[in-house]
Image 1 (cartoon, one colour):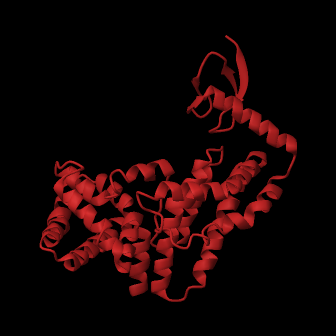
Image 2 (cartoon, one colour; image 1 turned 90 degrees about the horizontal axis):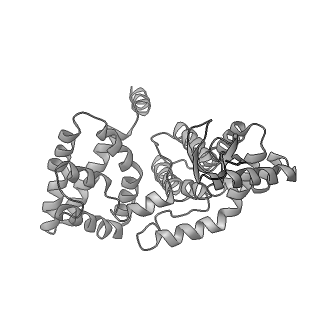
Image 3 (tube, one colour; image 1 turned 180 degrees about the vertical axis):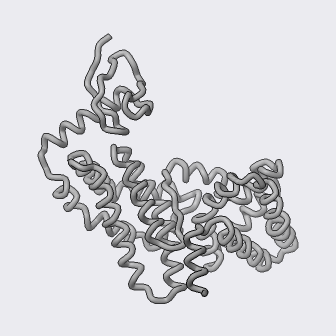
Length: 322
């Protein structure tokens, strides 16, 4: 059996790669990797190192463009629809690919890779924090934070991940950790284009889907389709309704995960169905769309307070109120 030199694309350790194997387990991190990818990773690493360009010089060339990515997304909901998201995302990725390529090069030649990632994440979140500090009205700050969260989850983080470099997973993780620590009432997660785009097949009805599944109802059941059509039609046609849907997209996945970890999840979902979804369905059937919107709004806000906000945020609010 012959061997070739390679580099694990996950942990960046040097490996001896069997020539007759398509996939192997890295002896350092235990991750399964393609042997061809390991060989390419080493070749790319050697090429970048041979160029002898200092890490921060590479980063400096695109730093301003990287930090302004958030500012350039004025309306993250505009292209976030089943018919347009894939094209909108690909256009966004292609326009910014040179940034991700430079970040990857800087990461590969950095002597302290963790320090570089921490610096890039701190720079990005710091710029976002500066932008938020210019907004004085509390309601406007909340609206802008919601837009920023959406831009991060739907475009920026998935675009970085889509580059599929050695830093493409670690950098978003650093950014998310610092983002949630910096901005109150925020708990975003890393995401990928593939997962988000696949979600359109289920039409992003996280909570209602989880409720109906707990009650033994299929994904294409009458209740789910009725609520999805109401959300995508009536709510999305109204400014306040679109903002509500945007908030729902932002918090629902975390709410479902937290309920799912509880031993009484079934009871909780039954309560959501009885208190919110069932009345909504009845109101839609009766043609009272506005009343349904109020019930829907109450559901989102109640679930947010109960299952989304962290204990740290709740304690902070209690201290402010006292």
